[in-house]
Length: 424
Image (cartoon, rainbow, N blue to C red; front, side):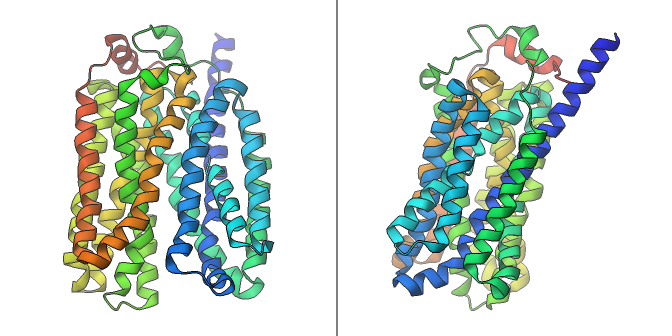
């Protein structure tokens, strides 16, 4: 009995240490990534960049995020997360340190692409989902991915404080050094997860388990990828052109900065909330229906309404612009916890790395297309049409989630989730 209690206590400590380490690491990585926004004006002056070329920095990042997530998933399956982390974080730190000194913008875009590999969402999600059982997984992933909004906001704030004092180049290096310190803490906290009790007891029969070598034949994974494509289109599009739209309404720079900050910061709340709600529904609905119901109605439905109303309410004044930007900002991030828990829920933790990597690869195109195409659409047809298209992407994602939720889940998977085997 004492041995069992000791094992359970160790597992509980291990999973919360892993969540803490992964959340810290992801926050620091996104702090480093958002320091790009501080450098944009000086880069534009130094290299004579047009707005389209400036936007290529964001596109390169998302391309690296998507392609890097796919390869990280494959590498995790073949070499484990520790070696994968070592490769990815080394490349990320080198790229981050070199961007301030490179004198060629094409080479800077290459380094920005490498930085995108360092987003490590697939890697961190794989580690966290391997520690947490189904009925706790959504909230854990939600806390983890809430770090994206937190890190992005802190990065902008810290860079804003340091840049006037040190210059943008030294600010880049300071934040890179902080990330390096985070790597040490991460390696001290995060260990290999033991097998989950629910997976041992359910034995994950062939109907519910998909190996890393044949995940591409799993139709539910492709549906999840399409739904996440819609999320990326909506979210990364909104983040990239919300400020541009607000300036057309003659808001001051301070007002625009406040609205944009609150639009992003609300994700720190909505991301874990979406995961928590989906966890509460797992026992009654099973993981597939619980996750897709939450994604459809409590996340993407809110995103669709919020984005559709932005062009109608924002012109009414600063207060209304803040409210509707926060409603729109709540939506898509709330899908992170439920959506990126599903690969482990459906396929087992052994296949979750490649599965999450595939989902992010499919989704990444949405984050590349929207920031470039939607502003062009706004130039031609006006910003109302642009926001309707942004809202429509969330609506399509809602429908895809409903289709995915209606697909059949093997009884053993639902039973395992309902009984809630723990790794604690």
